[in-house]
Amino acid sequence: MDLDTILKTAMDNDASDIHLIAGHKPMVRIHTTMTPLDYPVITPEGAKRLFEHMARDVHLDRFSEVQDVDFSYEVPGLGRFRVNVHSQRGAVGIAMRAIKDKIPPMEMLNLPDVIERLTYLPRGLVLVTGDTGSGKSTSLASMINAMNQRYHKHIITLEDPIEYSLVSNKCVIEQRELGADCPTFASGLRHVLRQDPDIILVGEMRDLETTAAAITAAETGHLVFSTLHTNSAASTVDRIIDMYPANQQNQIRSMLAGTIQAVVSQTLFRRADAKGMVPAVEVMLATSAVRNLIREARTFEIPNVIETNRAMGMMTLDNAISQLYFNGMISREDAIAQANHPEKLERMLAA
Image (cartoon, rainbow, N blue to C red; front, side, top):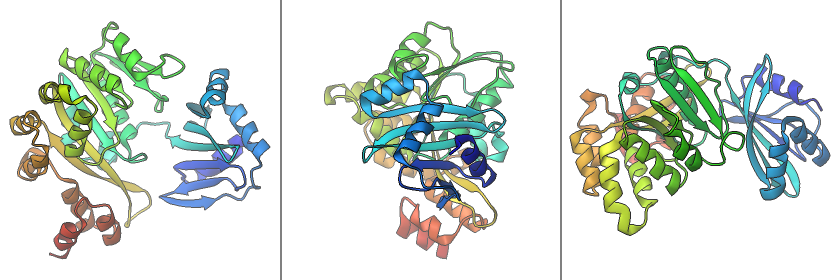
């Protein structure tokens, strides 16, 4: 079974994900729906051969150690793919996410106008959050590309793995991949501050060491972008604080309040009016009121501040969802299913 042929078929069908699992036909996700491709069932031996076709020695060694490995794979003329290989029922399982060759401009992503304003910030921490597959990487790549076309600066990214290939324009861009170029996000961040960066992208603040290093980088005058798997601004702040031991949490609240610039939380919806997906976006901007709430451990009040500052560009997730619904872009069922407060949103949609 030829891997590149499978991937071409998947791309021709506008698939976002490809799953190659022993005992199943190749499966693809097309606009949230899993669909089998018309190929033979994959055998355990076939799944292993597909893995070996994509992987370098370092990936094979990593898989033999922990039974999981992440890397990227590129097919010339077709595109790049983010790959996870794992062990399931004693056989190899492969999950691939298609990464589009061209970085879409921000105006094509249906993001709020305020997101572009974040690319003009001189320093601080900007977090783009959401579930896996919510479009975080695409939004960040588009933001980085906008700055690349405007500034003469030095941009360094730390990614696991590299997804979009960023080409230096006015900026000088370096992309470092975990495993191939640095062992961990935290290690890469410790050294990146000696590499004269202006803008730093950290693929994910997944542990305390990485989070502390990212906040330190923002404190020292850099503009730092990163991601978390959280679904709202308030839960993002809480997640960061909760990473720290109890005796350090007051200190980190103060540090975070001083460095945070914005939290952008994305949820993707299948469009009801056309093919494709569209994001609902919660936006929190770090006003003095928001910073005070973070310092005083009153993050439960952040949604109220967002609600009362819509004129500044802030928006709660449920209000963003309601806008998409009233614009005819998503269905009522999907809107309510993914709301933070389904009963409240249902009343809002009925009004």
